Image (tube, rainbow, N blue to C red):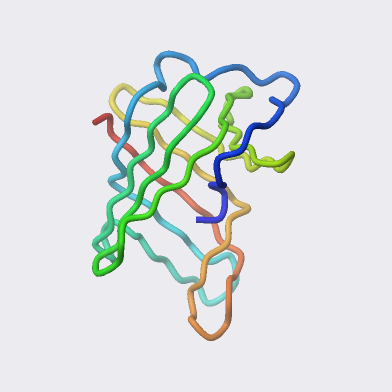
Length: 137
């Protein structure tokens, strides 16, 4: 999960604001999917295909992302987060990862065309599109 970083204090990007109240709280993923951007197209959904669970908690200036895949230990990362237009900005040591977000009536979706995922164990990471859908916990 390459766009979530370790907890470190950073300076907020120009134009970014704190997470608005509608986004605050805990969200549980119903979909966490990577699609390869190179042929052949491959798709993996960590929730449906791998039996995983992912939770995203958002406070006004920070986030915690926790995930667990079937047969693996639970993992957790956190850091600074801000909203800039229709993007969430996850920050660490001056490095920023942006994902587009959309807030619906009862769900939150995030996506990125600039993600990476290991589709073939021997081939290493490859470019991927990423989409996740969350419901409020």
